[in-house]
Image 1 (cartoon, one colour):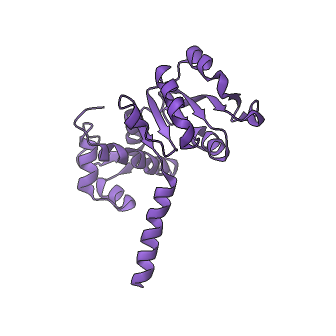
Image 2 (image 1 turned 45 degrees about the vertical axis):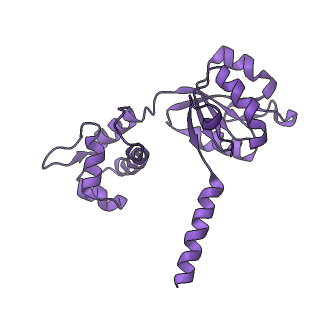
Image 3 (image 1 turned 180 degrees about the horizontal axis):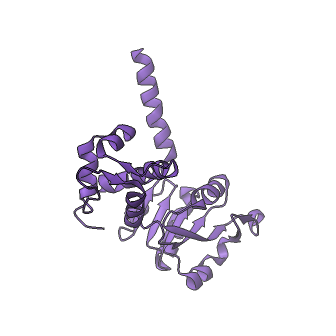
Length: 212
């Protein structure tokens, strides 16, 4: 990824990818930046600016070839990279993430699931048996995962992340409230705070209702 591309542009790419997939699946071959902008609630200039960050993909007077643009954005997002990934926490959230998120191209390949609960050890989620957390170090030394998905409470996080970083994990998809980046600034962290999102919606909902 080029260093001068803003994170806001990067964060819009998955949305472009999702919209283009829908267009492609509906047999649409060509689209202009104006038409794409209208569908996505953006401006044509914003779309052209974003795509120009990667060299631009359109043709003057033609617009964008939908299947080709979909493929190019997929390449930028490295959806076929298949980075070895482990998931920690096989509770309801962990099961949902493993079952729903890793069903398609995402750039990551789920290779192991771990939990400290003896009762779930041996259960199979998405074709992968859940291992007890005691086997984590040996598994990491044998399989060299680079990413970890964290679906456990924050109070268990410090020791776990210290171990994972020592074992070579370099990126985290973090569903806990623990600040991994503060303890390990050398790793990449994408935090997912579901309650933050819900509270934001609560504010917007109540603000709208009070206006009415």
